[in-house]
Each structure stands twice: as structure tokens, then as C-alpha cells.
Image (tube, rainbow, N blue to C red; front, side, top):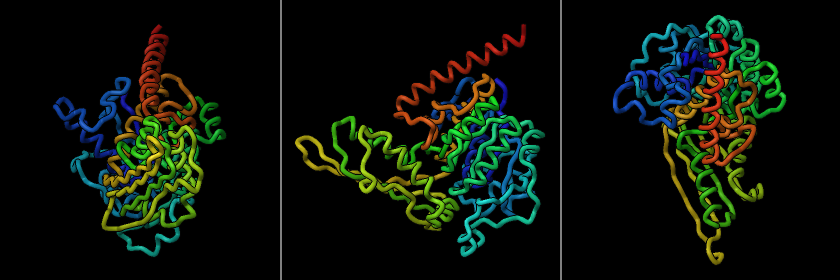
Length: 376
């Protein structure tokens, strides 16, 4: 298998954790730590350390024009540093279009906590993608940035690269955009990345547990707090409609009978600056068990938000690369169901994992078949 040449739009905390992770797993290759923290150490023959970042886009003055290895640790990024030495990338962060990527209320907060738009002229992302030889573009746009997400989706189409949408701005799950990727012969994975062990995957698992054990769920909520730019951005409730839809549908999909809208509340709660990239989640579920006897569950989950995301996006990237090499086009339903909160088709997580193994096996067979055909 070839290396995966990756472009990243949005050099925030999630990008920092992803690139740190690539360097980390490259450094521990061949040791007893090489598989720790990975859902799939090897996926279709591809390992995390096979990913190489070849292009990067942002709009912040402290990142644009800087080397990738500098920008990843520049404010307002505040995620945990678990790999100090990521090496020299040879990649300079280039200016993207702002569009709807910056919420106006951020201007009321200290510079260290918010975005600061650079004065540089935006580049043509499709040209950069072509020149860099990128295979896949990952979008890490802020929540509520539908126009910016679509802008990079179109750039991926124009440059003939696969697309992974990690944010709750619906592209891959939108039939209009899905048709565009199918027609272009390009794979895409989305929308809205699930964390490794985060609020949504935990809530989904608990909901399915209640159903499988015969407990009738009356009501449930999920509240989250954090101190990164994602939580600051989401203080503008007008930007949250797609986020709430994504998270709510992810949980509702695990129930045989969805709860009435007024009996389920799932959504970001508040911005707490000192938490930095730590996300604290509170889940409550109320139901009735044997004999109609009430029971309830309360859970508090504390996680570093961005590494939690990176652990899953490495699967999405590798699936997208496998599909591209295999000539598989359009939304990757199984990979999206495994990796994303709002996929084109929801699946129980256990079923999605089993289906993913079958998808990978089929994709590898097609890649090998294509290689044999080329060699004849």
C-alpha cells in the first residue's frame, strides 16, 4: 500500500492531535506500544504512521505563513501535547477563505482564546491540493461553518481528492453533495466525527444497553462543557442547529422507538476557559425496568477532546484512501457509520464495526485486482 498524502483544512486542536499522533506512532513503531490507543492498528495494510501531511489551510494570523509544526502549537490551540517532536514537515500553512468560519461574538474574548483573522490573500485550495499531490482532504471547520465546509468539499472535487468531513455541517449525508462525489468518482466520509470514547458514543452505547436489557427509556439528557475554541464558537446558539441534529439523531438511532423531542435534550452547554481542551460530559437517563420499577443512571465523563477525535479520524482517512485506490466512489456508508455521528445511514456500532471489516477486505481485494490489471 502507498503512503497517504493528507491535506488539512483548519489547523486547530484536532489537527494538532492528529499530527502529533502520526509522529507518535511513527516513533513507537516496532515497540510494545505501537498499537496502544488504536481501534485498528492496521487497516487494509495501512497504519497511522503511513499518513503524511502535504498541505494545510487556516485563517488565523498566528498560523498562516508558519510551518505546520509551528502552527499546530500556536494559540488559540490548547490541547494536550503528547508528542513534542513531530519533525520538519516542509508544509507551510496557507490562507483559506473566511466565509462563515468565524463567529462575530469571538471578538469579545481575549486574543489567546479566539481566532484572529490574518490579512493574507486566500489561496486557491484546489490548486494547492493538486500541486501537493494530496490524496485526501480533511475538513476541521468550526461548528456552524456550512459555507466554509462546502467550499472545501468543492475544492476536493475540483482537485480530484477524497474528502473526510469531521464537523456537523452536512455534506456527505446531503444527497446533493453525495451525488457530486459519486459523479466525480471520489470517495467521501462524513459527517461529524465520533470520538473514541466521547459523549455521543457513550450515550449511544448506554441507550442501546437499556433497550437490549428491556428497560423502557422515559427521558435523557447530555450536557457538555469545555474550554477550547469549539465551545467558545458554540456560545452562538445560531450556529448549533446542525450540531444538535447530529448528536440527537446519533442517540435516537439506537432506540427501537425514538423519544419525543421534549424527552431528549442533547447539546453543548457552556464554555469554561480553564478547562482548555478538556471536555466534561454529563449524561442522565431515566427509565422503567422489570415490573415497571423506575431506575436512573447518571454519568460524568472527562476526556481530552481532540486526541479523542484523532483516534477515530485516522480510521476515516485510511478508509477513504482504500476506497480511492479501489475505485469506490461516493459516500462510504459503512466507514461513515463507524466513524461519524451523522452518516448517510445510521447503524448500531457493533454492526458497523463488523461491516467495516468486510468493507476493508473487499476494498483491499479491489486494490490488488486493479494492480494486477495494470500489470498485464
